[in-house]
Image (cartoon, rainbow, N blue to C red; front, side, top):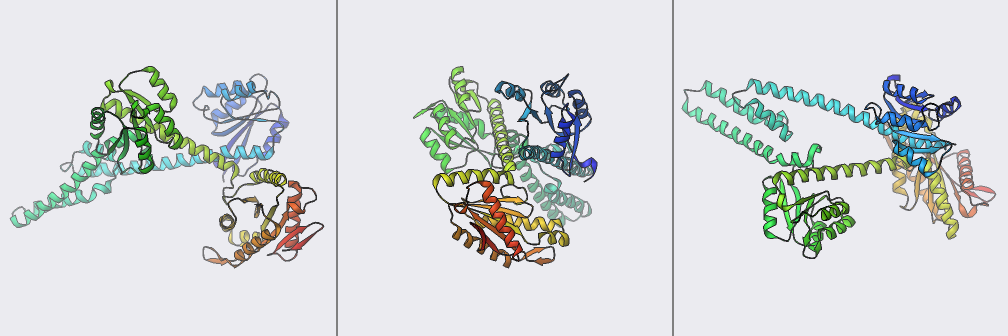
Amino acid sequence: MTETEKINLLIVDDQPANLLALESLLELPDVQIMKASSGNEALGIMLEHDVALTLMDVQMPEMDGFETAEVMRQSSRTRNIPIIFVTAINKDQNHIFKGYDAGAVDYMFKPLDPHILTSKVNVFLELHRNRKSIEKSAYELRNLVEGLQQANKKIIEQQRAVIEEERLKLLLQMAGATAHELNQPLMGLLGAIELIRLDRNNTQRLDSHLNRIEESGKKISIIVKKIQGMKFLETAYGDSGAGLSGDRDRKLAIVSVETSETDFSVIHDLLSKNLNVAVTRTDSIADTLTHIRQSFCDLMVIDYFLKDGNGLDLITQLNEIRPDIPVIMITGKGDEHIATLALQSGAYDYLTKERLTETSLTHAIQNALNKARMKKEAHQAMKKMAEMTIRDALTGLYNRRFFSEALDREMARAVRNRTDLVLCILDLDFFKQINDTLGHQAGDMVLSRLGRMLKDWIRQTDIPCRYGGEEFAVILTDTDIDHAVGVCERFRRMLAEDQFQYQEKSFQITISIGISSLINLEKPTSENIIQTADQALYQAKAAGRNRVMVHAPGDVKHG
């Protein structure tokens, strides 16, 4: 990776020793560490460079970390740069809240835990990489769209007698269509026109050519109707181009919870003007809950007065079973108190029947769907961030940090419940040879596949982790040593017999496994069970590899 491709990570501290310490902890191949000793210097760097993350000391002369953050938020260039505040003092809640109010995404206290620091930093670096990748894809997509638009424009300019230029451009924008969707009928139409010019004196052939024109015209008509039918979806779904289900071709499924037949007819007529909306009516809380358990629903329009309660009661129950469905409350009374309660309960919008129009209803649906989509995306992003802090990206297994926390937790539980716990440490034999002979991509393929095999091999209650490099660790809960040995032996044999394929090269790998159990430890601590499992693994390697060894009190024995 070249210098210009590196990700910029800015560390800000007025103490040179602290800067050097942070720099040594955060050295990564694709990261360019930039240092500043004051808030002013940091602001200058951020204005000149694309910074992915800032680690900033709170206590600095002239301008402290909070003041620097406030200045950052005033500039469009720097306001979106995430900040992790670092401090050795002021651990009280008010001080921490002040940091978050200033725009911090996290708050860490000195002395820093290297594993926690690197895990948190890696999350934001990965987010920056993803953002850059998305920006690159968006740029390439814009170029592709511009290319298609230019191609479409040339076709339109050449065939101005066939279809009006601005109308086709508008239809293409509304439908998201590309040139190939209209290409076949257009070419058939143009070809028939050309043949009419050649055969204008041949009546028999003219009939055939007119039939071709009629057939092409019908195809174009079908496409135009499809475009017109998608008009509402473009409005309701916003920029996403798809409904909450991701299927743009289906109709938008709306449930109207309405006791009045007359009022439902009004709502139905307003919505049914759009061809791609399917409106279903329910008239009670019970019927509505039954319906959503059996059928798909994009959005609900709820009346306040229902047969078996009110709209607020229904929203409360929906929040428990289907909080993902956006709700708009419509009532015959313009009561601000009801509107406030509805929005507080989780409704996305509130409309009164006396002011209900196609425009107001369409606008409310558009906003509700967009809010629901953003809420879903935010939830997925938070879930992804949480996963990134505990998962190894290559293998999909838990990472070293999670392993340490899980081992402490499971050891304490086993001691408390007086049950056994087994730790297995697995190491691939001669893994370096794979990297040296076939390349690191082949090595990554082996590690990734081994991760999947481990997840298939163990129980759901067990905890598989990537311990480091080509080493893996598995915590087997509520398991005795004999059962663990049998399971490890079966996995070892299965792996040894398996064929790995990379490009045109086929090869086999073996694994050595060291096992230790809680019940055989003199002192039941995480450090001891890791150390004894490591010793058993070392003995397995020394004895010739491709074998399972078990730690026993005072020695290590074969599995």
